[in-house]
Length: 153
Length: 153
Image (cartoon, rainbow over all chains, first blue to last red; front, side):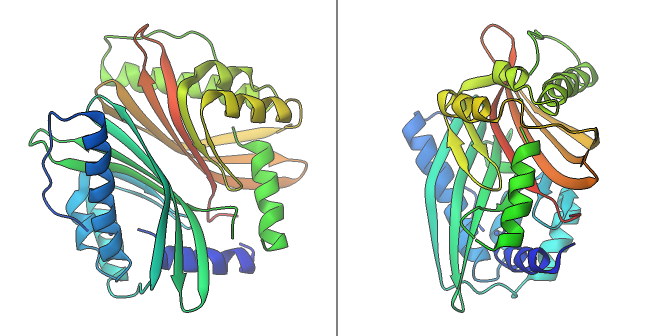
């Protein structure tokens, strides 16, 4: 792989994926649902950007699939191992979640946004897709994440 | 944006997204559904890799969102304009859809795969997420696509 691209990918990997609690939602209107999903994502993301993967790990489903610029990961156990290996390695000073869009289709919700992170003078732009699915216990969990570099880099 | 990355992104853009028919499915078991979704995707993809966007355009929902390495596009009309601008510009000699995985959650299906395309001696690796949602008329349409460069480049 081209070294310049690899370096970008390596930085992206440090900043990409993370923490939230046990938010439970069931019958709510679309606006409430949008706000709920974005709040769940932000809570996990903010933990991750401080190096703590527990938030994301608490909302990844057992049947989980994942892309980032370097790798493809399938299954909760594999993503857990990866995130544990990254624990403490991410330190982002500031982030912006740009134009989050929530598409609702029954018990499945697609959240898409662009992420800009600032870290040690570096600015990185990424695209993020999170597919949330409401579990039988009503908790929203992520069944698929796709992180990639955006054209703004 | 770094020129080397831009060149990769430009090539990726030429090869990424597009046509398929009116496959209608409703009650079927998971394996049938997996095969159906993969067949729908392959039909559209194969057309697109010959420069014809009609297949993908026929299965993109009105409420459609899209990421590729260069841009974010929201809404059917915008993606249509983009694809029309690319009509005839893609010519891929050979492709491999690697390890397609289908996750089913009610009327929504997440298809993920890696794509390798061969074009004029160039080989390009990409990651693809397609979120399909069954419409009221039972046709499966894509509500979200995320294309990105994979770490194999």
